[in-house]
Length: 228
Image 1 (cartoon, rainbow, N blue to C red):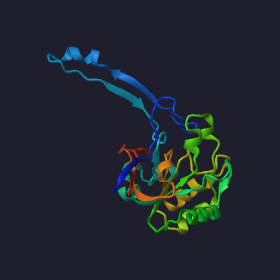
Image 2: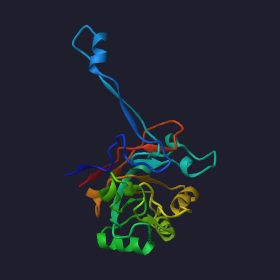
Image 3: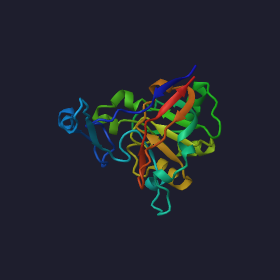
Image 4: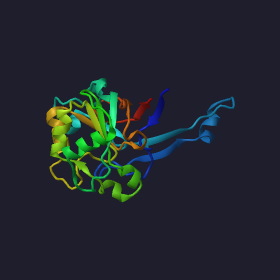
């Protein structure tokens, strides 16, 4: 029997977003008290307003976010197959913050999981960043990132799309951002700001369809795992 696991961070005013991105803003737009005079019955309604960065909460990057080429697809132009499919989640939480996760680390994590990684799988990397720091300033600074050899590992394994439970898959100390460059050159994309706690060491079906915002450079996503 399968169950659904929410892999998405809550969206609220004050949530941590990558430095330089638009901060999340939420507000009451109309209330029941304001709308009830419009109707002659007991009916009324209320709505909530919000402003989000397209790369703010749990989201997937568009190719246009990664690549300055004018032909790079924006989020609504990307293949839906990139956002759905069989997946595994590997535990790399033992890597010290602000250091590179290497290919050797990923090999060790895969072996320790006992899982088989098949070409075409999605692969997610549990750094424990959200669990340790999700409501603290350290969420934006104190985590490990994938290094250059890890980028090669992702390509060699034939991974379709990958993701992390931190605000970027790159080492926060890096000024080169090899993961994002690999994604630019190889037309790979990835998710950021996931919650992976319940799927570490598991195989599952990943469902992460982004909002279809025309021209957007990323897609806020309600990511879900279907776990047997």
